[in-house]
Length: 567
Image (cartoon, rainbow, N blue to C red; front, side, top):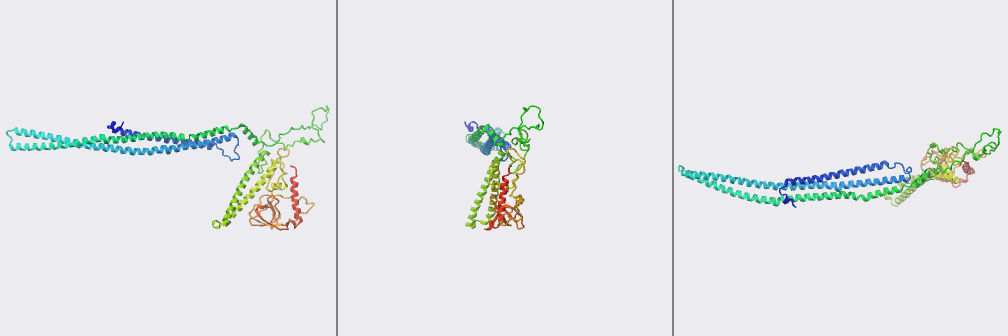
């Protein structure tokens, strides 16, 4: 079927239909736009929901239970799912809505062109019809005038009273009107023939072609709508595999929930390492009362000299295990001694691992800076080697600080694990301003409030010990000198404040704990970090004074005595 032949007289209806087609296409485009806005809002709400329920704590505080980890995995999958909804919205906006709007503009322009051509053809045909109609009316008028002239001529010709001149005049008027009528007839015939020809062309050539173009346009619009319907579905289908993977990830996360493992994590997280408390002994307060009855009464533990058996002595301060009550909140201490042994060990081990990672980063940075410095020294045009020295020095300083922190935490870890090291290890533990807090372990496995085990940093030998045998009023002799590479605030007890480039006397070498004992020119003594100074020792420094050798021995002896004291 063709619009040009079957609908040759339906120009106005085709005009309305083509306009309806474009309106319908734009309506579908509006539907797609609202759909993609729904997808965008849905994705945004999903991301907001995921963000709301994602953990906001640090990695150390995040729970390790499988149920929590699975929930966080589900949140991650849901976030990916939201991303796919955003992809759907973006594809719909670009491939469907945008394409429909562009195509709608093209259709409007094409429809306007075809309708203008149809109106022009109709206007030309109307113009031809007017010419033909005018010539027809003129021919009709001329014929009527000719008939009147003929009647006048016949009346005068039959009138005996009419003069010859009147008859001749009427006759010439008749000939004139007949001639004009003949010309009008010829013109009318020509216009009629032209109109018929143009009308045939109009309804058999021009209008069919215009209507055929409109038909093609409308069919292309219909095909385009079908393609957009399919593309609309394809956009959704394209993300189904990824969405399926997201859903599979959620199912996998659900399968990873393990109640046994969660129970084990609870044990690992809260296990204190203490032994359960033993039986409380019976304390008999009636020992001084004379018994009148039989000695077969309730037996009590045998006393020696009226004193209870020390094996069953109850310490009111050491056995506060808070089994069923709320344990008082202990202050957070640097050495984590406020924690139970097992928890303290885990925390210290984790801290050591983190410090080792930071130390490795600093070492890698130092190596990279040294390589860059070597390149600059070989190729001065690439850069100044001296410009890297401050950064290298800063990196080395950071490495020394990290090593000190690692050594300090390792000594605390060894203390928890019961691995008592050598004297130098114990002294290094004291060198970093470690104060044993209230939560320190006692041999019985409970908490103790004893403050006698406090450590000080750096080591300070008791000046009053051995005073009865040796005189310690004379200062130690200098065994060398040192230059401060960095400033040191000396905030810890026993340390000494120094400024950068300050020259000091060395009176005691580093014993392996990272501290060197120095003296200022004013006589003030104290410890400074070995890595902060550049030391120059005299060759015979250790043989200058037997007093120096005795002081070193005495300091070592004191450290051994302190470490051997019972807790």
